[in-house]
Image (cartoon, rainbow, N blue to C red; front, side, top):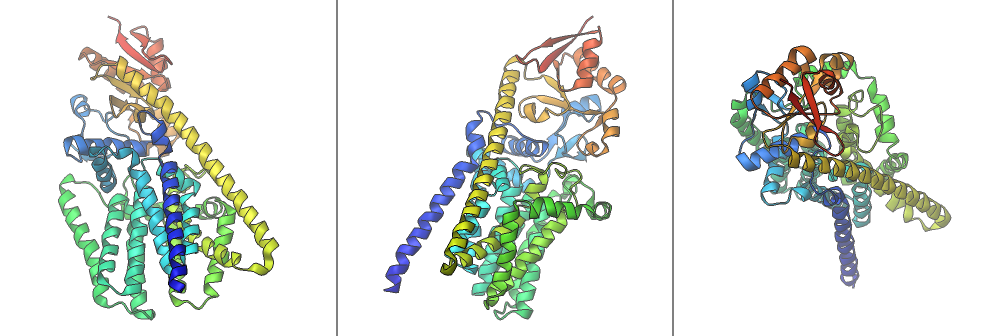
Length: 524
């Protein structure tokens, strides 16, 4: 009799999960489905698209700049790429590049990040269902899947969503390994940790957390994990990691680096000490206030779990709290340059805390399920449900507005890209300050910032090669024109554009309808 009752309930839960994933996939593909020709929205996206295209078309991880070699400069390269010498450059996160490259080959690049986003939600559901129950799992999946930052970055080409998905799968396998004591799950956990680190180096935190968790289970938990399981987990990760490092050592580049632009652990420690005061502001802006109701519910959820006697739930709650603190510790001090001053769902700071939002969603769902079981406070439950509904509606409304803005922005840039490609020859070179992301998939781009700009904004040197207008840029343009190379400049390259426009040695001709792109001709 009980099985007959359980089957319809299980079918209903499966149907609800499938419908939720279908809804989320549609939500996560909104931008790419609405933009006719997808270009990058940021330098990070540009790197992913440029290098994945290079891998798919040329089977190479290295971007060689013939223009830099020819003119002995460094302006002709993807912004924020890693210089490995001899005018060769690589992009960070090779695993993510390969994922996108594979998707390009099969015509799936527009759906890849969205699909990994759905897979991440699915495995969070499976993880929570195994630790707690079905209702808690569905609510956790809903809360995380509709988190405004998760929705936004599932529509974009950043490494964060695939990385956090591989991390969630690794956590799921870790729990199944502890639950069943099967070596296969422990080995898979190490494998997906490796995928996560290949996709985004900072996911090494997941590996460290699971390793600590395995040791804690071995020496302090009722379900004993033998030393061989821990050795297998470490071995699968480290052996493959060493093989990858050996195979890429010929690039002479720092491929394992928590800081995306270089600098190593010593640099990171110094950076931490100089910016440690930002932790408080980051916690207030991106944890407590993002939105505040989620954080409050999560706190009540932790209290609720520790009020129970389930050792497995209490162990994994402690594990998730430690993981939460480790990820916050890794990124919480970086606020002064990475979106800290303008709190928004599409800022860099928000995407670095995606796994933190997953953990908050888990704890919040535990409290909600326990709270709604109480039938003796029906009015309070109804009021609380209304508050949650209003908060969720506000979050979805914020997500929709942000996605619409992103779609409109990318559509206008896409139109500019298509028009520019139509009116410029294939060997054209475009000088720009920030529109490299708009044109670099299809045209050669020289990206720069003037020395004056970088002195005023020193942190911008992370992305740009400094240039002197009179000594560097003008002579370079003269040489290129003399060599028969068609040279263009964007109007947003204000100083260069105005300098050329005022100089009677040059003739400036707009080639696009909005007069963003101008042809540079030298008057003889």
